[in-house]
Image (cartoon, rainbow, N blue to C red; front, side, top):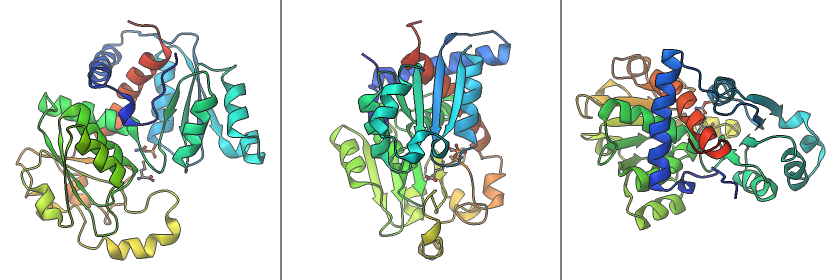
Length: 305
Ligand code: CP
Ligand code: NVA
């Protein structure tokens, strides 16, 4: 049976821990220059409907590190862009490649593809979730604090795709997620309900100062996700007061780190001073996309090791 990674909820607590452990090992091996061709002879197709810097490069380089090959496909250039169905595309691509990553506007595009694909499918960002990002974030937090259990993570800003995955990861990690959004921009209620029903600790506010109190990490993301460019002016007004600046950071724990999935919109959701501060964990976080995703790829496309 192939295993997909469409949602952070697709991983059990054991699988989640195992991926983080493997990611740390692969990171050490890469730094030491120890070859780890665990996916030799395997090919990954990467379908992107939207722009990407980190996800595209880290999956591409990750497959190279693992001895495999990655194939970038802009969905506009395939027959998908001319109306070939998602199901037929999935059936055909499964005959060529050993795994597929997809970045789409609609989450349902990925679930539909996975339904007809005989090889593992990984969500590389949809309107609902960004599970690969959260694995990298978890690795970053584990490196800094040793253990994820009972860490308090404050999410400030838009209750978006990244926020939804973070919230649901509370179930596997034991982290408390304190979310502060303007009214009308709350995270997906189903994500919050899922987390609460399964032992996750989620608190929601509309006041950032409440969410960040004693937090171990403050996490933010752009207010204007890809595809929302036409509502930019309205959102910039609605998010007034939600910028992660130094006075807000000072309310967190003294050793708190700042997380941002990037790309940052400096001067909007985060100030230069915070992003470039000693407390910024964003560059490690971005690097860890590579190591965490390599572990995901090995577990989904490789043999047991
Ligand atoms: N964080 C993230 O997914 O970045 P990209 O859009 O550059 O891939
Ligand atoms: N929320 C952002 C994340 C980008 C990595 C978006 O969907 O555009």
